[in-house]
Structures are given as C-alpha cells and as structure tokens.
Length: 68
Image 1 (cartoon, rainbow, N blue to C red):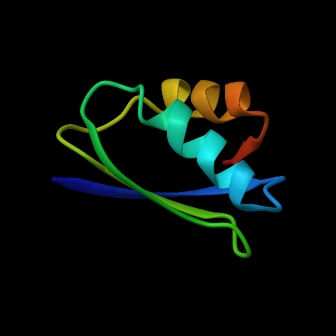
Image 2 (image 1 turned 60 degrees about the vertical axis):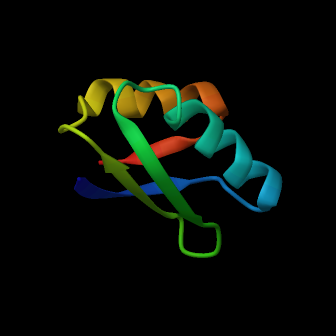
C-alpha cells in the first residue's frame, strides 16, 4: 500500500474530517484515510499512486483546500 500525506486547510471539527474522508474514500484504490483536524494533515493509504488533481478536487468538493 502507498501512503501519501496531504495538507488541507479550513478543517475545524470532526464533521470536517468526515467530509474529507467521505470524498477521498470515493477515489479508486483508496483503502485508508486518517485526518488530523488540528494540524490539517491527511494521510491516505491507496493501492496505487493517486492523481493529485483528483485528490485536490475531492478535497474541494468536501469544502476545503489542498495546500500544494
């Protein structure tokens, strides 16, 4: 499994984390998602490398922004 860490801005609560998990979980190959709201760190475990544009779009759909 490939582990990739992302930095997300705008999350303030557990509901925020759930929204991010829900959207990222829809991407093909995603198996694990850990969200740390206070730091904005999002760790994603996937079968293959994820397309950064798809990750950014999923986070944007959840209502947040990926830090590049």
